[in-house]
Image 1 (cartoon, each protein chain N blue to C red):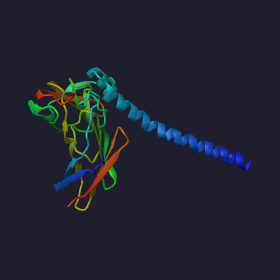
Image 2: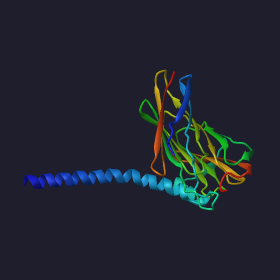
Image 3: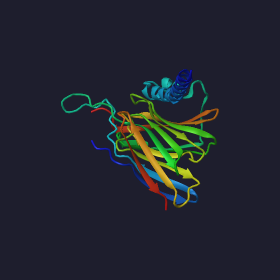
Length: 150
Length: 104
């Protein structure tokens, strides 16, 4: 009897462990898919499902108009919008348009900087996801030397 | 290639810490070819977790199109002198590295 109960307990424990492991995996898989998408529509679908995307002047993106070296293009994004959940950098003409996502918390102001690679001249989009809406600003960046491929 | 730690610099301005980090990493896209024509396999940082006194404050998810030796700057609210900032990355080949900074 005792053995049986123990076995049941262990099985239950194992099952809950598996359940715990699966939840974060699903989220990760969704994000990975967004990074693998080769078209803008695919990225939008994975990241925002069918949320409305609104152009907004409240997002400030600092990126050069002309990037001499596509391998290193500095980009800074900040916004005065509230309840920001995440910030995304999308480069339309790259093989995989989604370049980077930043997930914010209450203790992180929406103000980030990084450097990205651009294969060729492209529109670069800064997307800001809030609780219920997605805001976007875009800028054309001319690349004189590509950063992807040989 | 040996994994190098994350380099972090930061200062506090009116209660907000401005953090700058450099992560030595090749960030290979998987589309580049070596001199002999073979494709160099993709090798890039997928996730960067930033913690303030052990609590996650910012998470970055990256694709292969973030530049080599990534630079990442962000801010942390409510930071005071003596607080620690920890940054850990994990790449697509299962490697990881981290760095820690005690704010002045």
